[in-house]
Image (cartoon, rainbow, N blue to C red; front, side):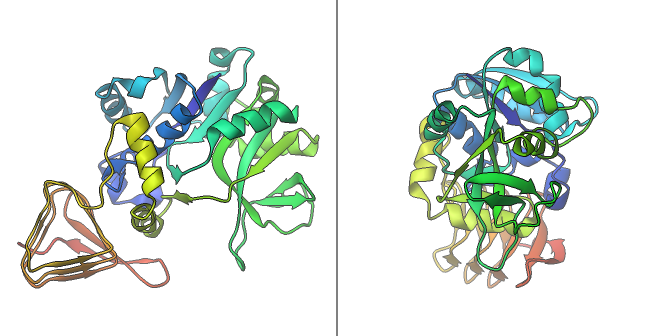
Length: 323
């Protein structure tokens, strides 16, 4: 079995961070997000993979190649026009021949048990299996279940049922699924998944463990803060990628008189005496001056500050205070 790693997106909701780096390389606990997805692939025992690229493709190839492809026999599919999760996969159909594939988004952080997922898929006899998660009370997802069957995605199949689950960005697809994919820019969810669900050919596995995505700046900050507390997940990443996750980079310089609470501090950062940093993220190279107070903020590598409001909105953007 091979894997398909989705890494072509622009990450528009993560701007200004993604003006300077592709979304899969945005760091989570000082390790590029892509590493968490690579760990899911390697944990499943898969050694061959295809990775689609579009936005800043050289950055991603350079990063992965500089680490011996993390032990993967890896091919790239560079998309001149971005094709989405469905079109990008269809473009590579010939590379998968007659075997199932593990599909993994390159912008999620999760402890999905991919080895168990592959076993469940083999036992199911279905054409595909999507990993879904239950939404918190009072929120709405994209997936509706009727008993133990997926019957709808965002109401496109007209089930009228509540969408209490969400797709996690991890799935297994058999060659049968390619029949419903298009070479046009499309989503795998609203082509293959909806077609298979309507035919009773889509299985699912509910993930009840850790999962975060980094869709928006607020979600990105929350993912970093949450991963700090997920030691087994961080150990998995180190085991399969050789990359060490660390909330505070070893080469950050924090004055003994500073206070850093539940925050991620990147490499080369300097925090002055009396500074107070709480629930924030400093990407590499930032400097916080003496006595500065930083709360729920993200600092980009270019020194731009993004303040996160209580409603999750980015309410302020400015420059890093002088050291």
